[in-house]
Amino acid sequence: MTQAPKPRGLGRGLSALLGDDEVAAAVTPPPATPSASPQPVVVTPESGAVENARPSPNKTPLTLPIGQLKPGKMQPRTSFEGIEMLVESVKEYGLLQPILVRPLRDSADSYEIIAGERRWRAAQKAQLHDVPVVIRSIDDRDALQIGLVENLQRSDLTAIDEAQGYKRLIEDYSHTQEDIARMMGRSRPHVANTLRLLDLPPAVQEMVRDGDLSAGQARTLIGVPDPLAMAQRAVAEKLTVRDLERLTGETKKTAKGGGSKASPAAGGAAPKSADTRALEKRIEEALGLKADLTLRGLGEQSMLTLEIRDFDQLDTVVDKLTRR
Picture 1: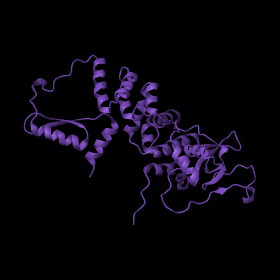
Picture 2: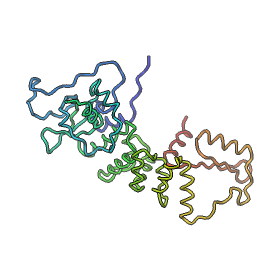
Picture 3: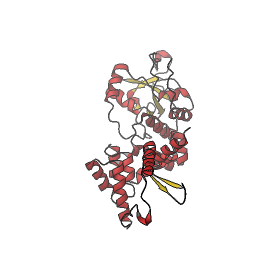
Picture 4: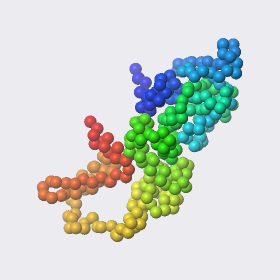
């Protein structure tokens, strides 16, 4: 018998933020089982609810007119393109997951979307009149956290939007990078590396948002005298991250007044043997990193140098070296 896949850490993070598993399940993908979904509760006078009365915060889904839902101001996502497949699915099967909302203080019959804005937009395009919702009273900080976690689970939030969300958590809600890493199920170096993308000019950040430039490519441009020109060159010449590392490394050295690169054999270093080069190649294949193995002193004393371009890559290396 095949076991169902275990939920990811981010799902558990949602449960912690929301306070119960039922609501967390509303913003995470449903299990792929043929069992029928429970029918949402419809608020009508016949069911005992008072007409035009605001539903109470709840743990079980009910339905609301789609026009009563408003986009969330804490939404970290800036682009909702590419939802055509979701629209077709909604047309055929309806909205299978409820949308998490909170009451708007300045309106008696309106609700702000906390998680599920992409589904709400798809439901609009599919011309649904009512959608299933879960209503919770959530403060701004938790609303931002939930929006980030939900979008990170979808794996299509742009690195710039992710960085902007982290920045808001730090500046508006006094979170540390360690807090964010723990909450999002990320490493602290990943959070720090993502935040560094905001040091780039707005035009370069927009290239990352549009998918013209990857986050890895963009990180190599930090500290370059003219990052926009280098970014445009990267797109025009289809440069890889490694290409950019080489070019930006040379540019940074020139900008700092560094002279020509020293020869590997400078200082009387002996040429490497075939065995040493073979070991370097094995290390490079195992770790996916440029390796330099140098014999030092007497006997078999050696120094191994690995070229690591960012903290994400460092995390991967540490994981491989410490895995048992």
